[in-house]
Length: 248
Ligand SMILES: Cc1cc2nc3c(=O)[nH]c(=O)nc-3n(C[C@H](O)[C@H](O)[C@H](O)COP(=O)(O)OP(=O)(O)OC[C@H]3O[C@@H](n4cnc5c(N)ncnc54)[C@H](O)[C@@H]3O)c2cc1C
Image (cartoon, rainbow, N blue to C red; front, side, top):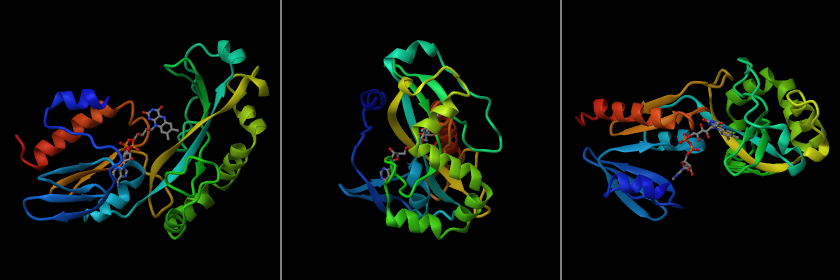
């Protein structure tokens, strides 16, 4: 993937394991301060996912909302059950919730993922069930929007937490799509964390949100299907950059 991206432009470079920790601005340059040194750029585009709001604030963008993380745990079908899913099995989404609900996805490596659930995470990049970060938890719980979200969705949240720790309850939800599924048909899989932009009113912002500052563009909210729509979002950002930065 990185080779493909770099081959499109000989001057491009990908730097893994490099954390942007601060910014300096002059009228001509943005300086990105990282754990591996400083980098100067005339224009910068930020796609920071779970850290998007913090990066935007550090870059001087005024943003009222906050990013909160919702972990999604997956199970996988065991060998004996793989014949039960030939393609994709998806539910009809409930527009009340920002989450689709559990579904069955045939992956390119032949595995079949089932899930995810949706539980509030106490660490933004917390992929384990008991992961905790004091900074992230304090930041989320000192924000009124988080409490409003909790109170509005109390029974949904409690159910999701119980399912996170109970294979039996997880199976019950999966059985709504495949009634013949048994405990032996599923085994624990991986987990992901969704970044949701949460308003002070307790509502998650469900649409894409891209803002620009003087010399930078920030992708503040790119909820699913942002991965599927990545190329189209890239085009949108390019158009914004051309227009806003007079690049044409
Ligand atoms: C469980 C789950 C299932 C999903 N299913 C689907 C699906 O079926 N279809 C779909 O379209 N989408 C799906 N999504 C959503 C999709 O993954 C996201 O919408 C998409 O990844 C958002 O892209 P992004 O670039 O905004 O953020 P990310 O993909 O999270 O990328 C952000 C990047 O910024 C980096 N970063 C953060 N802070 C810093 C910093 N300070 N310095 C340097 N780098 C930094 C991170 O390491 C990361 O690499 C799913 C997400 C989850 C969690």
